[in-house]
Image 1 (tube, helix red, strand yellow):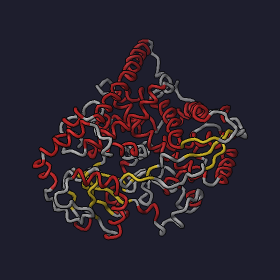
Image 2 (spheres, rainbow, N blue to C red):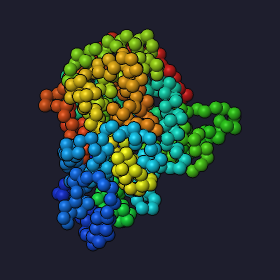
Image 3 (cartoon, rainbow, N blue to C red):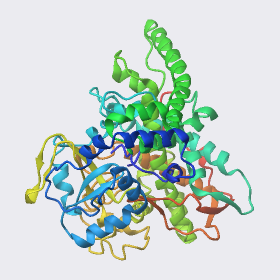
Image 4 (spheres, rainbow, N blue to C red):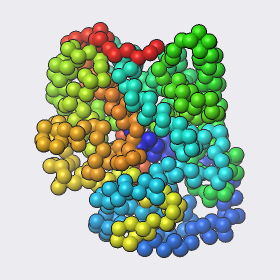
Length: 537
């Protein structure tokens, strides 16, 4: 659960770009475009109001240009525009007109300032502006993020993170099954698509903890968890092309929004019967004075809700939305970097052989895989999920250092260029899996250079109060998967595959065409026979 709950762009938005291809736009979207033209006066008043922020604009609206055009333009050219802003205004704030609207981009050194203003610059409020009144079916998961009860936050911080030792055994079983299911036992080299293979694995393993053993291998649910994010992002992208007051009509008419609704109702038919069954079991256990029987997000949400009404389907979908694709992106990036130099893989195997046979599958043993931890964090540094991060929405007019005013309702973010800052990292463009392990051996570096550490020079998981609460689970999940992938299989880059990402706005995304060569090998010890921490089944 990487990207605060990292909900922004993942590689699968490459598929969303298809809806921007004029040859593929559905008839309903064309009709909606005509509707928007009728509403030009409304759009114009929205676009050209003066907010007086005093921040220079990198890509201002041209004469007669609509914001819709600017949003589409940013999806295509966002990283180039960000680089222009850095070059023209070094060390200073500037404004970008993005696919999410106008965003004030602060230089990397201002991360602490944003961290110090959690109420005035809100993480949660940035999700509440998609619709003017309420969030309809298919988009309800976004509303859960800003729910007054903080149900999602409590499930993740009070249960998922604190119970990591109780789910390690379940993760080990499911990781082994997922690797075998995805890759098989073929001992000759064969080619695999990186992201789709990793996505299949992560969806299975995550669902074991989110939804329980009953449904984590249900192919219908797994297909839904992998594809719901695509459906909702497509719908969101279409909606944001129109003024906010028009979006309820877009929601009713647009094909992409319809697919998001359909995905929700498919999920509802899976989650609600399970929830009803669990509630009946809980009543029966209470009557017999028996304790808790399950250790998954379904149970944790029921404990936190304490009888209050909530949408369990939306909760499950937001867990999948927040965790599965961002985790898959980081794991895919790590695999690509390691496969580019198989000697790195052999080195990591030696560490696994030193730790796991003696310690087994435990939270503490995963923590002792320090070089593996470093390899993942370095992959995250070389290719993060976002190049602007800590996106916040102002809840009131807020004056920052230097007299910059962020008006109520406006967005502000922090430039993540420190990932590649040569003053912080020697040879920053090169992948060095020992980099953070070496940092941990330096005075003061033990806690600053861990994968789950949040520091202002490495903002992949955010920083401060709203740093990604699911990063501890994601770290364990990725390490567990890598142990199975690296010990049980050999890996090389497939011919023609490069490490270069593709770009969606300012977000580097794992190339969907990237492939690896793989073959089954005989592991030096039996991972499936290791002693594991057991949770409540």
